[in-house]
Image (cartoon, rainbow, N blue to C red; front, side, top):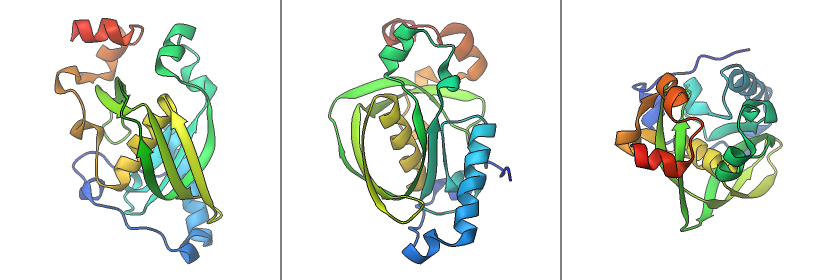
Length: 193
């Protein structure tokens, strides 16, 4: 079932979400929520979705970056963004254990701020520990675009939005981003903003 994605201004987006108890993770209602969130994310379309974005203050997020979502990017653009397919997975009660001091910048959007993007600085590499949908502990070491997705979704679980970190002069509608910046390198973009 496709869920309603709440938009900026909804209080749930600014709350620290509550952790799920082990017993809650395996409940049929939680498993159904995970499937509904995946369907909603793919339908939007997006590469991540956190429970607060569907109005639930829970430390739960889903992530999947399919190759078809970036098929229109050139090999140079993919290399600059370090973007590769990421299989579907579920993050429950995630904790970022470390972040590199190396920062990368690029445009980010959000399903809860429909129609806008902005340049957001993020750590290039992160290490995240979490529970999966089977309540099993997992660890991710990610870099590039995948690290960006993880930081964005985990931010939602702490009441953060990308606008809290963005370079304000870079805020653009998706249409203007597509028209002016989508095919440009970050060096070209920073010269133009």
